[in-house]
Length: 328
Ligand SMILES: Nc1ncnc2c1ncn2[C@@H]1O[C@H](COP(=O)(O)OP(=O)(O)OP(=O)(O)O)[C@@H](O)[C@H]1O
Ligand SMILES: [Mg+2]
Image (cartoon, rainbow, N blue to C red; front, top):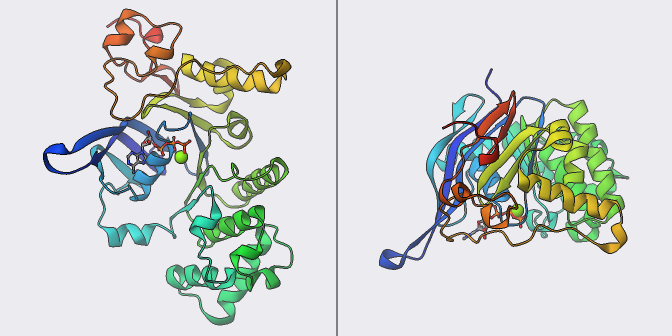
């Protein structure tokens, strides 16, 4: 059975500069990901690992100079890799929607909440007049916005960060998309609001059968919301498994490092916070072997020379590490 989204062997480069001085930065490398219908895939990894780039590639929104250098992206069994802009616009906003970290950057400050919501429903669903307004109000209600009739006429600056994020979620839900992508949707919020928004996501996924890709650097968020997780590092998928397995028997030393950083924080540990030594390699750094090798306590000679393949160690659990590669 194929999933709602299938990303196969996707590599993305960004070309900086022009002519003889142009430099090719390798951003994503041979990424394989899939999202089943009605399921939540969590994407985790430290800053700069390629989480946002992966979802931008899927949406056909790579930044300037970005190009897909290998692989394919399928959505509902349709190959949408490098789809013409017009066709991709028809998919974005209706079938796939995105919620960003900072809603102020995606809300238009010059238009009221109602005007912005109305436009989506008009453009994608052809709704106008009272039908359109009623739908907007019910969407605002669905994301627990108090006094939705009033908020409908508000401009974004009048709302708190949490309320703006709720509006963004309402907009993302407007056309009942098959896939909702949320990129760090709670990071900019205080802890209480964060918890409320996570509850809201949970509620939504129970009510409608949309699939989610949830991008976060926070494993706590993953444990609450996701079914499966892909751990990214330097543009590679290092491990991919169910959330239960991630917490019970993660395999990759990098995943363990992320996990330990979290446990240290949770246990209080008298302020002694574990952090993985070293830093994420910058794009453009020459990597010959495993990208995590310089920070890995299990590093061997082979790790410095060859990139390990992503192998399935047991059913539905994949890892990219020589420690689990027997034979060959
Ligand atoms: N426009 C750009 N030009 C060049 N490099 C870029 C550009 N945008 C992103 N990158 C690089 O691509 C890599 C992946 O970036 P990405 O934004 O996907 O990381 P991320 O995992 O989402 O990190 P964060 O947690 O900080 O959001 C990073 O090294 C980043 O510096
Ligand atoms: Mg990001």
